Length: 85
Image (tube, rainbow, N blue to C red; front, side):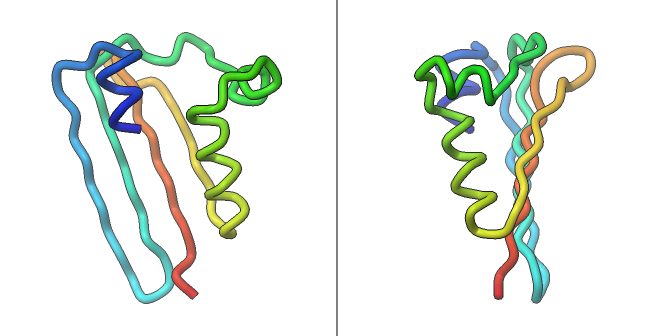
């Protein structure tokens, strides 16, 4: 996610937050870059772009989830949660 923020989004600032409970680990990465522009991760994966789509698949395979959304006024918020059991 950090690579995408720098390489593709041209972000100038990135905030990384990591939290843990006994049951789950949560990661949030917020950048001030270009934003998603309606990116469809499944379509990107079908077209051979593996980056974030493959990360989402690995997170889901571990029983977790990954969400991407636009940040305000611009940029991207990436959130990941994985179980620790």
